[in-house]
Amino acid sequence: MARGQNRCAGETLTAARILRLEQQQQQQQILSMEMVENATFRTIISKLINVVLALLAVVLVFVSTAATFLSPFVHSTSRLLLSGTAALVAWLLYHNLSYIESAASSLHSFFTWPWS
Image (cartoon, rainbow, N blue to C red; front, side):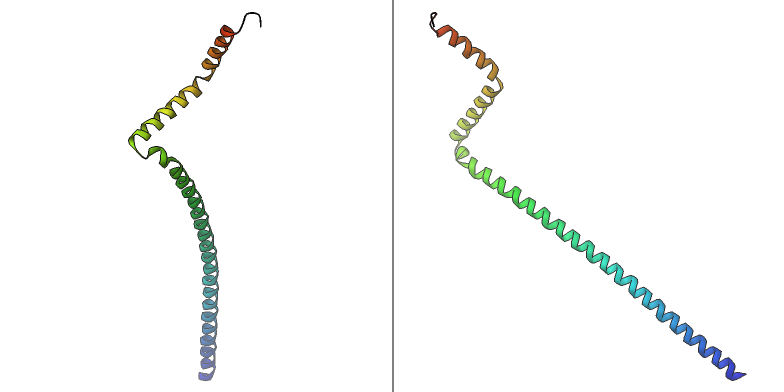
């Protein structure tokens, strides 16, 4: 009987080892799946960061171009004041264009010859 019990104990140990190996294999598969998901997430994040950096580079080019264009107008205090005044006059003319057109039409009719 001792041999029979020994065999059962040996089979139980073998079954336990097989079960432990299967559990380790399942855990490794789960870890490998998590690593694949993490790699995918990292890839997506890195691509998103690259897109954001490209957009910021475009914005920087526009800002640099605007600064280069405006630098002659603000080089000195007198140029700055003259440029600001010209911009203010242009803005006022644009917003009062209908009044200016009606006044020009009145002046045109006043200065035309009566027989024409």
